[in-house]
Length: 272
Image 1 (cartoon, one colour):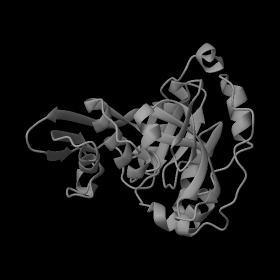
Image 2 (cartoon, helix red, strand yellow):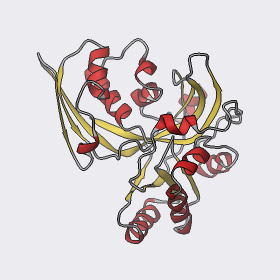
Image 3 (cartoon, rainbow, N blue to C red):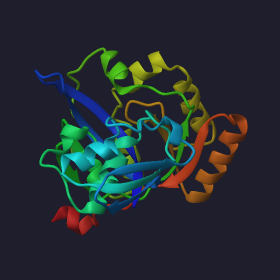
Image 4 (cartoon, helix red, strand yellow):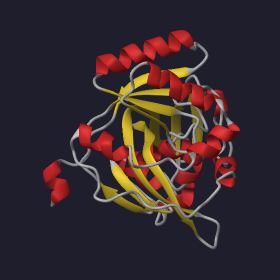
């Protein structure tokens, strides 16, 4: 089961509830790149982690895969192939937990209680996410060719939110983006990632990632989520792959991947 990387094309922080949870308005896509999760129902739960980022995965009760099983009262043998860097703004553990739940075809009553991204990751298709993550609107969006760049520096989400200057920003502009890539990119130019400035203050190398994407001809570049992963949009797969090779050659210590977004609703379904 694929646990696709989640990309926030835009992320506006629009408020904060009395309980401390932030209100968001975000345009979210998912990619063909991600972790892999194998789930086998069993009498006793266990978790095995492999892959290049296995050492960064918490093995105990704080692991989101195990918390997802507990939330639906299930037991299983879980094998997680960890391909995505941790604490990087592209879903990570939440995407893994969602893959476990999809494999079991089960979901808790309030999936957002396990993480604001979990309702979106359960769908893993283009969508608009609002509230504290519980309000989901599937969308018809074009497939985008992306390069993902992470400097292998973690940016913990709580620290980024704590560094926000304001928490009452405007929502995403209306109307929602069309299924045409050029229209979508023009629309994105009028949006923000409100977490990018505080993440930059905590992790200045993010600016180097954005500059590297721009230098390779990205049509649009931004940080995803709370960082530090940045994405660049390229006109086609060949351009994305060439850019990824050039960036990795210049910064061999970074994590750099070319990928594409997963498709969403058809325009007819979105209109209906």
